[in-house]
Every structure is written in C-alpha cells, then in structure tokens.
Length: 181
Image 1 (cartoon, rainbow, N blue to C red):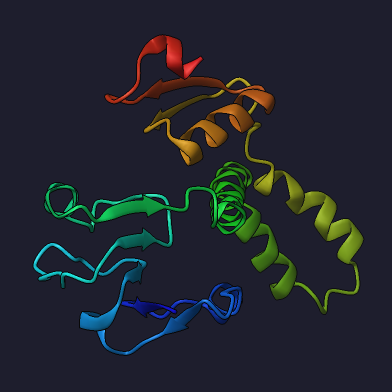
Image 2: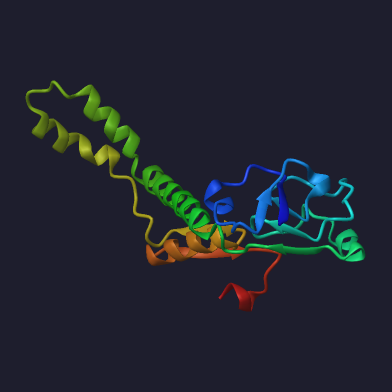
C-alpha cells in the first residue's frame, strides 16, 4: 500500500481516483508520495520514504528540484489539468477588457443614467431622439491599442482588437517578434 500526503487541499474528484493500492495519510513523514498545489516545499525536510512529489498544476517553482534530484525524489506536474478553468478566466478577462473599451468609447454608462433619469417622460421617443447624439461616442474601429504582455490573455486581447478593426501594437520583453506572430 502506497501512502500519499496532500500538502494542500486536493479535490476529492482527484483523490477518489486512487485505487486500493493508495491510501491518504496525515503523516508527511510516512508518505511515499506528496501531492501539492501552491505551498512552497523549499524549506521542507523530506523523509527517506519519499519517492515522488506531484504538483497539481503546471509549474514546479514551489518544489526544490535540485534537492529532490540529489535525494532521488521524482518530481512531476500536471500541465493542462486546469486548462479549462484558466481558459474561462482568460475569456472573462478578455470580455471585461473589450467591454471596457466599448463602454468608454460610447459613453454607455451616461446613456443608461439618462434613461433612468427620464423613465417617466411621456415624450420619451422624441426626447431620446434629441439626446442620443450626446452618447454617440466614437467607433473603436481604426483606433490604436497598445498591449503590454503577449501571453495567453494579451494575445487574445490583441487578436480580438484586430478582429474589431483596431490597429494593435504589442510589446512583450519575453518573446521574439516571430513568436508573437
């Protein structure tokens, strides 16, 4: 029976996948395997029984790789395991950025406030016709947008802005011009 210790709270959706060959333990010193999410293990003393550390996520910066290599402890991660959650957060951020640009360029908030203030107006159709030019704003098509950081989110913002007809300038000190395209 292999004993596994979870440093962080690991979802039962994952730990319930263990066969009867694996058992969760609260005692880190008796564990042959450690599951970790974000906790730093750099100051941790590993027991002689530890064979492997699994990072529930993409990176391993919270695990002392050199020390593990010296002690023969296998370290691995699970890239892509949270890809759907990250994708959803990226899309939510992207929608907020684009919505913010549209709201700022068209004074949508001002238009909403005007509607609230004039909801009792018996001649609302005529009043709205006269007032609407105050909230016309300008199109974002043809406007210039600077995007700093062309990682997953920045690239999505840049591509969406290009699709909306904007002129996009991107900067990222960590990628080459060829990689950006």
